[in-house]
Amino acid sequence: MGKVFACMAMLLFFGSSPTAAMETPEEALAGIQRAVDGNDPVLLEKYVDMRGISARGVDLFVRDFKARPPGGEGDPLLEMLAMSLEGGDSEQGAQPVKLLLAEEARKFVLRNVASGNFSGRPVNRTDLPDGGLFSALFTDVSTARKELRSIRVQRNREEAKATARLYDFGNERSYPLLLRLKAQPEGFWKVTEVENMAELIRMIRQEPEE
Image (cartoon, rainbow, N blue to C red; front, top):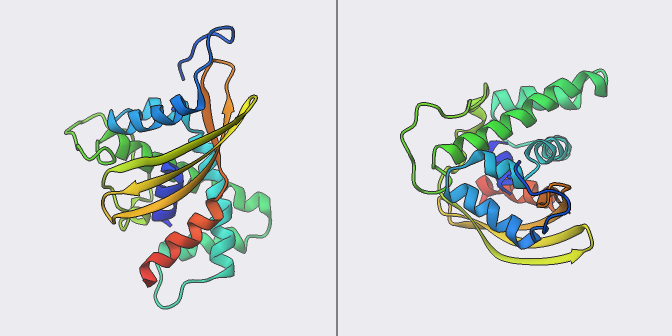
């Protein structure tokens, strides 16, 4: 689950006035990599809707987990959380758990950006962002350098779609990304959705079986 959140989640708030020159979608994607390379979690959240994407990822993960339960011995904490989400008395009752897991994924990514793990240049800092309560969920996640590659953008007025590959220097795997970006009133573009999130979740859940 942590690997899913880490991926999806990788998969930034200062801008010019609405009347000033708008940045391009390509500049936004370059800004994401600049945030990773510069150990800058604030810049990352300027260009990526971390909360929205994480929340969507939790919904899709629970759906996939229910459709394809893990074989053998799974993660007890993960199974307990997934069961509480899929078998709750109501959607309203499951919502707090979903919000908690989405926030945990966000915190994991921001901490690893700030620490320099995702840039491949770890730094010794005492003021790192909170890593979250359920760090055990992310123990099998690669915290090596992450790099966006092969970026292509198609723009349509105030929206854009981009394809890219997210390369993980730890497991040496390349993950396909289909991203949706929206122009922001402040003058920059922001990734608001990972359109192939369900596919990424299936891919990453299958990795331990390979």
